[in-house]
Amino acid sequence: MAIAPDLIATPGVVDLSFRRLLPAPRARVWAAWTEAARFAQWFGPHGSRVDPCEVDARVGGRLFFCHRHLDYPDVWVLGEYTEVVPMERLVFTVGFADPDGQPRPRDNFAAQSRIEVVLSDHAAGTEMRIRHTGLSSDQGESIGWRQSLERLESLFRTDPA
Image 1 (tube, rainbow, N blue to C red):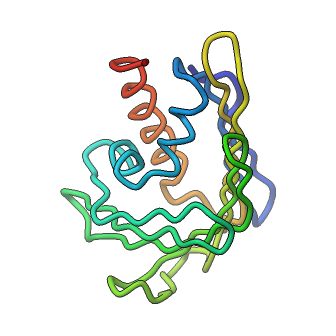
Image 2: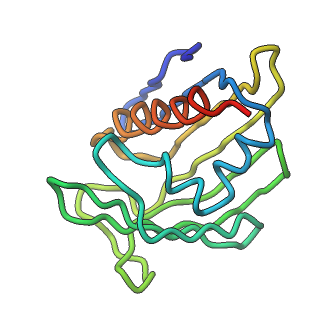
């Protein structure tokens, strides 16, 4: 369930902010972010899949995956975890890459952006706050996040244990 505005914009910079109440314990939400198989189940807009997926959620660890879309070319993403507080907070960078995991700039996109995920207990399950900063513009990221979070919420609604 969305409980906050989704978009904060200032000239030249776009920061996306999301807040959700998820009907699942914090440990399950943490696993959805830090275990590759679980992350691949929900991350990405409707109609996409994440394959392959590598998640090494420790400071200095790598996030590397491919967004595969039916109607678009594959998008390879490479990131690095910069802050990890188990069960509470993840901070990582993301940028584009080639299939070998080498950084590759993409026209009209920031070379790198930052994602912060904060989890806390709530009577309804887990409150999750996400902030995606450092975007030069919103080129579909807000829609992608909304759809990703819908997919995550759906997973927890169908299997809340």
